[in-house]
Length: 498
Ligand SMILES: [Zn+2]
Picture 1 (cartoon, protein in one colour):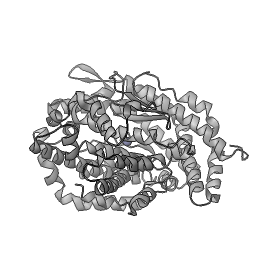
Picture 2 (cartoon, protein in one colour; picture 1 turned 135 degrees about the vertical axis):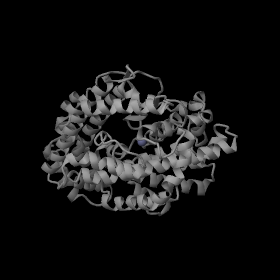
Picture 3 (cartoon, helix red, strand yellow; picture 1 turned 90 degrees about the vertical axis):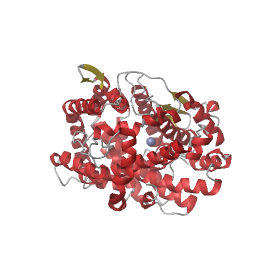
Picture 4 (cartoon, helix red, strand yellow; picture 1 turned 45 degrees about the vertical axis):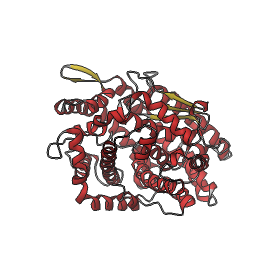
């Protein structure tokens, strides 16, 4: 960026880039096209992500006055660094996405699409076949994809040092302004303090869904546990969209009247098994994409992504690009968790889905607590692992064993090492999830306190949410929480949740 170019011009060009990337992401991962053509997008916007631009934005940030000017500069710097890394690893990213979409694994002599295999595994009642699907998928991952993952990660680590940071970890701690060390102390304390009661709390629910306990449980059984077919009757497939509409209506939102929200519900062979929201143009064009697996998963995933969707769709269009698209993703993930949590809320199950069987509702609530317990411990362990992975002090060859040990200890099953790179989201996104869980727990407490346990049916609760959504991610989760409640964001709050 020539020094004469101002931040507004840079932001306008960056918005075009981000929109084009999100559109490509949407089209490929929703299964509309097999190609994932991000290289031409990078080529068109190459000027946004040069070393000079990064240096210049760092100077701007250092000289910015506190408050919004600092925020805007920092969010743009994070984008520029992420873009520079993305540009330098785009061949690997493209190859990964395209191979993943085309790869097949073989199970019992039959071919199965690689991306679909995780869904099949979650629906498979036979434990041996689940293990077989996972073995086949991990073998393909190691052989076909891990070399690409590894090259991309090595290149990212190298670039962080080239840009003048000590490590990838130091770089993201500074860009995100998250004290990763302090967060890890909180999550490590959570791991330690919840360890004595983890198995005894989770085991009955594992037994109820899977048919056996930790003595036989394997990692390959976990998708089936989370899928929890035993609760399908609570979540009728034909009620899923009406339930979302009704919930939003309760908060004063008419989904059908939101011309800027596009629902993509159709099943396509190469559609990603992971639901997602693609904010192609915020707030004007937001896609909500879901893959159907059946049962509670569909509801949880749809509501999670609907939380993102309503957040983006309600952002004030007159805000600068930085606050509409960028900032602390702990905020948007927090709103996503808030909606997802509704599908676990007994009051919601009764009033929106008409559930009446008190015993079944209690069993479901117990199950969701247990499954969240597993998730929280898994992500706490992921953060500890990523602290080492990205510190650059130990060789990557040590990482598969470290990953497998940390995750295995936290979750209580033998954990395969093959996913030691594919399980890592770039830029310490695991930290965003961990902060988002804490943010959501605080926020949900405020909503229940002010509007009662049925807050989701109170239009004034919707007003409060819309007030928060309007700001996009101008404020980070800490500042936003302080503004709403005066509380400090603290992962310790999660202990009471499990
Ligand atoms: Zn999310």
